[in-house]
Amino acid sequence: MKPMKQRLAGLLALCLLVGLAVLPAQAAGRFYDVNTWDYFYDPVQWALEEGVTTGTSSTTFSPYDTCTRGQIVTFLARAEGAAGTTGANPFVDVSPQDFFYGSVLWAVRQNVTQGSSPTTFSPYQSCTRAQAVTFLWRAAGCPAPQSSRNPFRDVPAGAYYTSAVLWANERGITTGTSSNTFSPDAVCTRGQIVTFLYRCYGEGLSAQGMVCVFDSNTETYLRDAAGTPDVAGLGSGEYYSYCMVLKNTGTTPLRADSAYAVIDGGEKLAWQGFTLQPGASTRLHIYYNHMSGLQKAGTHTVTWYVNGEDVLTKTFTFLDTLPAETSRFWQEVFPLPSSSAIQAYTNPNNSRSPYLYGWFQLGKSTRFTEYAVDFKADYLPKGTYCCLGQWSMDLSSLEKTHTNVRTEYSGVHGYAGFQSTVTAKGMASILSFWDVYATDPYGQNVTLRAKLVYPEPDGNDSFGGEGTGAHHIRSYPWEASHWYRMLLQCSTDGATGHTLVTQWVCDLETGTWTKLCVYDTLLPDSCFVGNVALFLENYIPSLAGQVRSMEVRNARILNADTGRWQDVEELYMGSNGGLPQYEGSYAFGTRGDRFWMITSGVGGDWYNNGTGQKAGTYQIQNTESGQPYS
Image 1 (cartoon, rainbow, N blue to C red):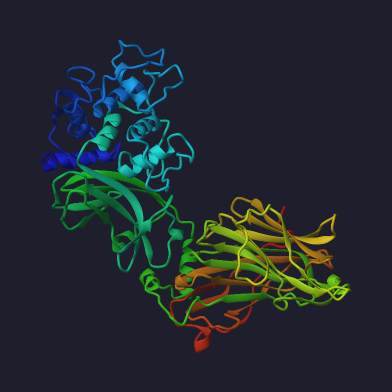
Image 2: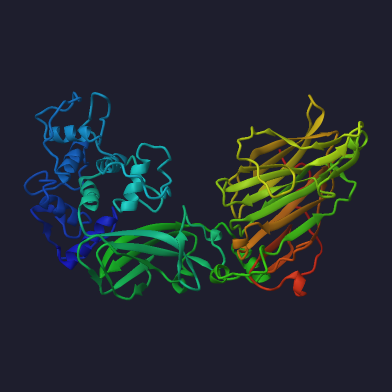
């Protein structure tokens, strides 16, 4: 077993191009171009001891020379103990006189490579990073990655090397060239290749740096940060922390007498000493009292030290798409519960957080053919539903030919909005119509159920629990702290004379419009009529304690009688609106050009106990008027 100092130096190999161990200046073995402070020092020593390489001369290894395809398969075959394989040779550019001949034949037989074409291997061509990890992955039997999470933006799904990169990243063979790039087309040096091999076949320790989400009160791990961490995406009571996961892959215990991290060249942030048993791992993270001032937008460099040696250096980038004044605003208007309070939330009397609603006061007889509203949700946990329109359809034409015309819920015919689901749909849009019941001129009772005409039904686009009718849900990747515009349009089907309703959404940051769905209402000469409601709710009881918010602005309608766009700047807002009265805390109001509402099942400031905010009428002034699209 290697001495402790040498094993710790081996940790340097876990950060491909960074991390310097301060040891006495001394050449590695017989190679004068490999020194103890080089990140590839231990890998080269291992490769020399195991017969993986003999160097480029008796005294040089040439670690910075580009590694060729012929060299890497030779290294790999020797690491596998398989050099010298013979058999049929499919390649015209590989001959028995070549040092890599037996290794190439082994690689072909083991399906490590099929060459650069059916008849060529290109042995003198530079080996790329993608090719290198793919060779290693295939030699390992093409194991499936344990997770589908892809931290690298330059590794597309479906590429020949994607599974290999994800596997190599999980194994600690490579951590990429940055926190979110792998650089698959960059060429590999000989030093980098033996480092990959050492991590794959050598023994010792592995280390991986990442950003994780922790509870600020209990310091418990919650989850890994996905993609580029965005401060705006944190829930209440959560914070981002830099973490190093250290694993003992050797056969004897590792004693760390000291361990600390340095962020952006600042102070040492230390942990107590620990012993890591063989096969065990530990997560070293920065506590909230230090990270609270460090999780700022920008790029940050973190170096971890164990027993005084720097073992891993990583660079991370944070985003913060939630303006500071917005964050302060929510803290001022609402008692945000901590993450631990939300996790501990249990209320046998409650299955939902308070249901907040609003009614745009348009007048019961106002007819309109289009309705548009902008919306944003800063707090958007699973189970959140932002309903942006609940309306009635004009049934007057149907009433001329039928009697007893009604809907299941008086004055309500349809609704539309967006959900954060726990299903395979993920983030989704919704458009629903309740059935219309009537009696025809012959005394027969008929049911008019709206029909989806776009897109084609996929068998998984409907949902229940909302009364009888037609209910369409489809995936749409809306995000927290991001402004969107929903547009509903009425038109007439030239073939049937029926009124069609189309739902659109626009990403206001990119200006991209998406047609979500089209329904044939089966109603003749109809349009929207009366007041329009919106509401914020959760529909998953186990998540009732989570904080959720919604803001709306720039609501407007296209009046069917005047043919003009009409701003809607008055909203009657309240809590629940009926029975049961769900417990929790909430608030609503206006801010500048928008209406806002926020709610959680945690707390006791609710309507039914007499302490909650009472319903009332609120006004704003739209910043946009007229046609909501161009």
